[in-house]
Length: 340
Image 1 (cartoon, rainbow, N blue to C red):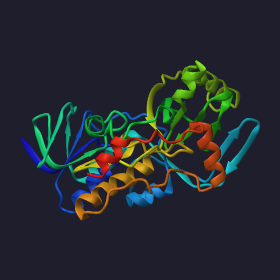
Image 2: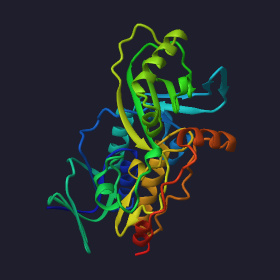
Image 3: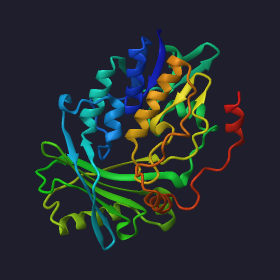
Image 4: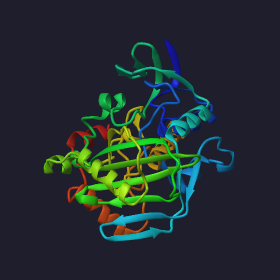
């Protein structure tokens, strides 16, 4: 049985950020992921300047595709305007693999099925042993499922469903475009150019609202393709989109139980206004590592729940996406476990 200080389940930005901090502090970390990196990861690939700073990313030395936008074109019903905001795009296929390699942690391809905890630590599938355990495996993370599902239940109204495709394309418009609430979509669509001839087009909406209306996100996708064609942004291209889901920021009171932690999408940290998840994932991974290394309190409730710093924009988008009920119901079990 392989024994390390920390087992991290999931090699995405949350897991690799945690592993990197641990390894620099001399704490042995093992990353388990069911995929072999580099792997395809559905994501618009938008990262903020804060993510660049948090990762200590030297843009000039980054060896893969990196694109910078000096403004984002926003389409809102009949309005069209440009937000003067510096943002970046990467390809997750490259970015995640680079971050994981940079961490220096040992990575094993392994689909985690069974986790057992005792007073001395955790055993994963009878093959791996550690004192600490970090769940960074996304929405379906087995660490969340085993230890946190009852203590920190997810709210259905905060689940976002997406449908997207990333592909080689000689794009003509180098700007990032966002369409909000097009055709009544409880969410938004995006056109995100990547450096050196790649493009990501996608659409996302709140799953519960779509279900209540009896709508299919694929219908909104077809409308989005018509919009792209009408604006001359995408023509004569056969797309093969795929979907996934994740949760916007809800209750994060119980994110540590004993020596088990959850981070990133496992904790449901995507921002409530623009549904951005990479920034919160990186921050939570760093915090989990700090808690293990320094004994710092692990908390995520003070982690920003918004991408925008404009209060009016935050409130408008938050309510449009999640409605009036923004927090899951109070959970007595969560309070009891957190107090142990």
